Length: 255
Ligand code: SAH
Image (cartoon, rainbow, N blue to C red; front, side):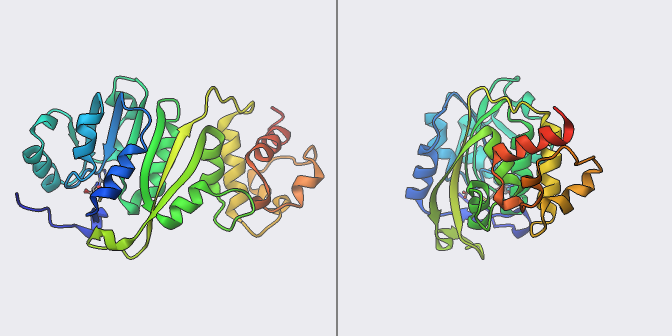
């Protein structure tokens, strides 16, 4: 079968190592409903088809979609040809919960993760390969250089784990950066105790100026900060854990 010619603008780097492909698919706990993002030439797909009850794929590249139809006829009505970022996730499995998996297109990593956050009610697990720098950022703890907005937002709702690194030599064509596989597993029954949108606003405002004290960066919220504990106002965002951000949100918005 003819191979798909890799298209750089679609972030196409095909994994060539079967052992890594298997390890990624084995990191999936929930196998009832799974959506794969960007199946490409199906290196993960072929392990997922027999393992998952209700399996679907979203792939933007027509040439890849044709390849998948030919290589895996059983997928024929399971492939959504289109952009994951435009997909209404609640419609993919009729509103049922599901897991996401993929060797993700690196150019849209952050957008994929914000979409997971927005759909946290139905996305139970994510198993994915990202560029290593993003994988470190997603799984970072407070105090680390890579700790940022997504670390905090995802930590509020998901158990985050860094699984393993993957050398760029295991792809065709090799990406410029190293890669790594992470998982996110939704925590049970999380209630922040504050309005989630306000929490997001506070986290974003704080990290907008990483090096500044919160007293300065929170000004952009245009809220009265007189009820905020002084100890928070002299901190920088990387010194705050998720619970600190929740407490801070409560003080600012009186929730
Ligand atoms: N899973 C394959 C391919 C990974 S490359 C492998 O591991 O070898 C990333 C894949 O994501 C490519 O097939 C690319 O066409 C697809 N892709 C890129 N942007 C996308 C988008 N917005 N929505 C869905 N798929 C996308």
